[in-house]
Length: 262
Image 1 (cartoon, rainbow, N blue to C red):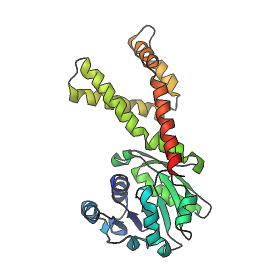
Image 2 (tube, helix red, strand yellow):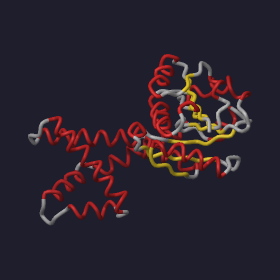
Image 3 (spheres, rainbow, N blue to C red):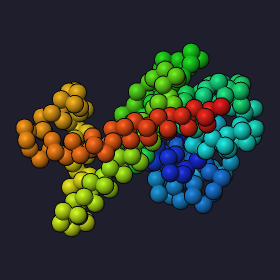
Image 4 (cartoon, helix red, strand yellow):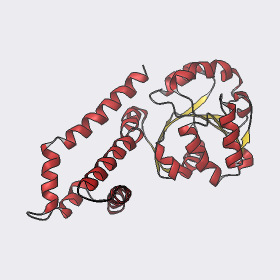
């Protein structure tokens, strides 16, 4: 199986680094308009650098890792050369399959939304596709992406929500970790130790949700002893609108994803 990627920036690079650890790097081609970046990526991972976008089109699966505003120019260049056997996998936020097909009418697309946690092999990635992608092709794409973390197929109507929750979500979590660490420093803990305690607490809490299968509210109740310290903190979060702030942040990100797709 040959895998290609157009774009080796933050997200494309993160996904492809994970892929390079799982698959034969000699069968992986990468290119980027920033040739120096792509060459550095190839040297780091062992993947094959190619100088032009068209040179990756002989691959079975080609990842499109460019910003949405550059898609029109990219497909104006390559649309006529995409083989019918090649599956194009787009990670452009907000850009629907219908729009992608209008840019390259003869191409077949899987749309994906990963997140930055791919850098540590813990991504949450959603994929969606149409009937012109076979079950075996979809399964192969999901298997490729699983190198970077957890992957699920969703209806395309949920992709804007996915973008807001798992795509943008890490930034919100990083802000929470930073705030938790700031609070630890305020209470007397050294800064480096505060980051470790805050990050590990979030990591472990997420693990409990995923592994226990319990409702997060039930897990929260487990920690809240009557008249204890935790319930006082929970009351303070409610007082200052913690949950509403998170809901508004995700809603704003979702609205922006919808706007990008228009």
